[in-house]
Length: 84
Image (cartoon, rainbow, N blue to C red; front, top):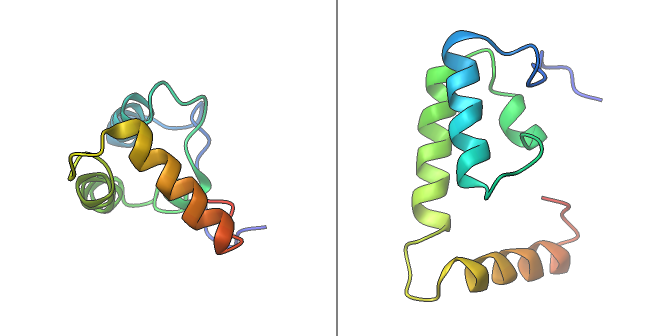
């Protein structure tokens, strides 16, 4: 349970709703926003900056292609016992 106010997608309005839309679009049509991103919902511009950095350095920065990058990220998370 989080102590930080989070916003479900159906509660998001204005700039937060826009940023949530960007995140979902990038995540190949994800059904929901990851909780790690929702915890920054009180500051949509900060969320956008963090998201932009994470997306820029995590996916598309190599010649491996998105599918391989996702597989590597999944394997590393599993090895670290991290559900993200």
